[in-house]
Image (tube, rainbow over all chains, first blue to last red; front, side, top):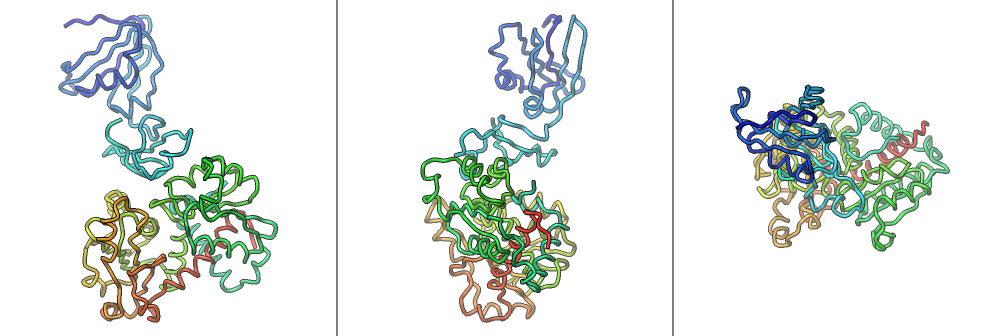
Length: 141
Length: 305
């Protein structure tokens, strides 16, 4: 399968195999009108199998969201057919308005206008806890 | 601006300073009687409380300050739907320091972000109760002389017992501590506290459902009430509420130097016949709550005597 080079855009590489569709939807890439290519289960020397997303224009990405979803991702920014910038992501220390606290006793359930904030408490196990009630973040967004 | 939301907001040195000031207040109450003259404490209590609210108010009066506030949500603008943020923002315009109890976990943190004055968490749901922990630590210091080389048993509701969570976290900073966790299966200490606090600090611990078997090992027995208000299902509460009852007969097997603590209120978990035993220190613990809250108010208002 051949997918062409992009002149200006973004390549999300080293996505955990099978994770690309989730990232595609969470980042709202389905709402873009430019070319977007989603490649699943590509061969990878480093990972065995990986997913890749190519976006045919440079867009603002929330690295905290991406890092939370899949910290192994590499973000390549392409300008004029050249690699202009490469970012290796990691788990963000804090995430805001990505996950919702599910604890019925948490103040975020009732307080209007409050932002949902979680902090990383165990990087090895990828555990995030609500800054308000310390409940563990749900595994699904 | 300094707040007290979680006991871990305070370093070990800051806690020990508060305890030292409390001991000075106990020894020299007259020295502090005008320390907060002209200052106001707002007690915003959205949940019923006897000891915590009254000890905060007594503490402020002992320091020569004044108190305003409410003792149930129904008598505040919350009944009209006002948010915690709005209430805190407005009360911060009237008072110099706020003590807040709220059934929702994290409410005092929300208040601290907008109040413009120091906010003290006086209990947020089943989450944190740091001033109870300070009272507990002052009690341990007065009863035991220090915090090291103690076997501490926590008994009862270890799942929802916020006082247990906070005290356990605070004691984890000291050497030679050992924990014995005594609870029914359904009310065991949450796994994250076992992994993130106890195991992370390399503290030896034991989990058991039998109080009698471990009682002779303990230097401190911290009893807790099974809290009806934390259960969504009344049948579960009724089944678990009398899991442990400490009696004079059971205490016969304990060390003569044991200290029996309880954050109060108690229901059935400590028989009244235990009250006269010199090892029962829960009423002294409640009194210590007033002294440590005096020290905390002085610290947050940056008043030096």
